[in-house]
Image 1 (cartoon, rainbow over the protein chains, first blue to last red):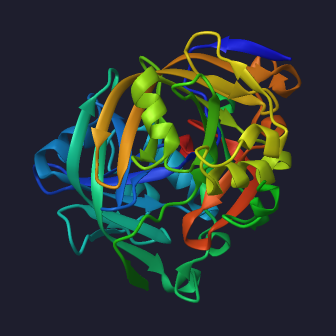
Image 2: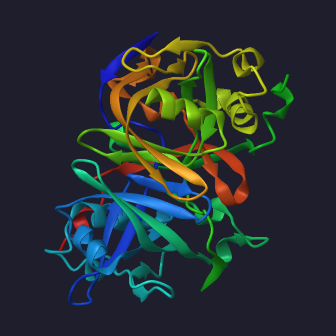
Length: 189
Length: 189
């Protein structure tokens, strides 16, 4: 039996994405977003939604670019910190000890210590209400070499985190359930 | 040391979302999407991206509505099947044994057997390339009663799946890492 819990932002899982931008003085900033994901295959695009009040929002609008760095579980404390405070008030790099690297293809910084990095140029913006939805075309993805298996980013080595909105909690990834586009074939009529 | 793997759709984790729609003859259809997530807090909105070639794409455009049903790991075979085949060719309900239920607030069906259901009315559409990005305002969320803990959807009881694009594989959720907006506070300067 299902119970209505009302109109709310509830979907499992959501990702833990750390958005990198430069401000007007070329200072690198970071913020953590769970509202985002992949949104187009050709051209490859990802989306992140940010409130207009955030420092990063203005940075993306000005530079038309952002990166997303995906933390592994050993950096979840740093990712949580980056999501709580504003770059207007805190030097997040000093507080976390993380290292900014200028992206190769776009005018935005990424996090050296995180295993998976996506470089994006802004291609679409939608004002949805409290959040602005930014769509970025992926110009490059970079993966830590020790997280690659046969040239692919191995999710078990990247060891990403997920966010559970209704629980306000972070989880790790669990066990392999099976191969996609394969395990369901036997059900075909 | 990071290695470039090129411009591709690579981000971890992505969700396993089963989109429910009605066709022109009021037949319920399902498809599985991993390109999607939450995209606005007020009003609460979620996004899913579908190729124009899919049966569901036309259904959403016509009815201006869709649902997202989140499968637990015990239904991952059914969710994979639903993502492989088209409702133009297959009766997915008969093949999977899943049961369509007309949503309460929108003109779309959801999956009775899945523990978490989101009912959406279409509010924004973006043509990004191969995929159309649909944004739906959440009008209600329904949760299986035995997946609630103190009125909240308990992610460990919902037991959702995640999709790893570069691995073409599904994973379960893993262990609790900590509380969000909390574990990073001690880093503040």
